[in-house]
Image (cartoon, one colour):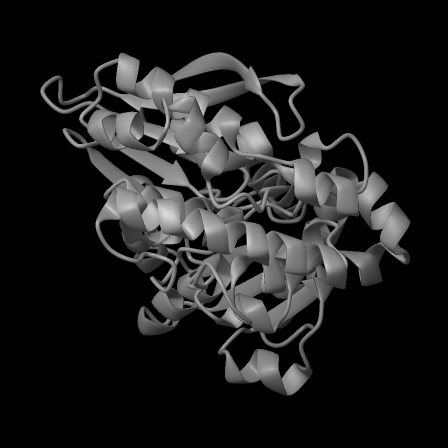
Length: 361
């Protein structure tokens, strides 16, 4: 039996690569004769560069400003297989991720965090002479509308001039606009420490900044799909001429995911929290849809599950398993995630062997 293991990251707990390795170890300990293929995934958020680097390119490390100004080491990927058009892949979470705050987000960090370090990574790629820069968006601690990035590239006019001769791509599965009830501050600000008053201040600040972005682009970009990604970093990239693509699709193309699914007997995917957002175009739903079309069953492993059994069945998922339920507590599931996921995968594999599949949620 050929098993494709293709999870996203489990938030800040496990990278997609670590999660895939843990599931593979557990599965093979129960079914050593199976062929296991690791294909960790990303939608542009944390792990984007690491997942791509397993398939192509050379990693480069830069010391840049983190979300609160402290120096952090961040990697970007250079794919120079085509010397006439090298491509850089940048992951915004490496420079402004929530995990780099050094603690829980607060109202202070919500206001202070910026994307200057992301701009430094893009600057490094531009200085390397690339023809395209693909920026993965997700997992950020910021709600600055990409102002830090623009400043790091030399300011509005200089940033536009520097990006005019290359292709800029915003890789994100978030469709939110920059402003309003569905915008970056209102929807994602509370996840980044913002209370109601802070959300209002962030909204006002980005409304003013959106006028600068409009002058840069020669049009309003704040209502564009994806403008609100990564705290409005998407809007700044759009103002620099970026086209928006699905981050999950970028990874799928690089990893040859669809062909891998078609050749599998079972797909195991997963993420930190399996909820209604998952079913709206994120990695797990994209894999499930492809597997369904290829008549390949899908099993989901997740840190937590916030969907009913009927919702899981309606999504054509054979089974879904919660790491929190397996471990017995949220704390153990987070503190011992690698080991707990391996043990859970071993149990899933053993049950699959005895039942031949079926719903084991």
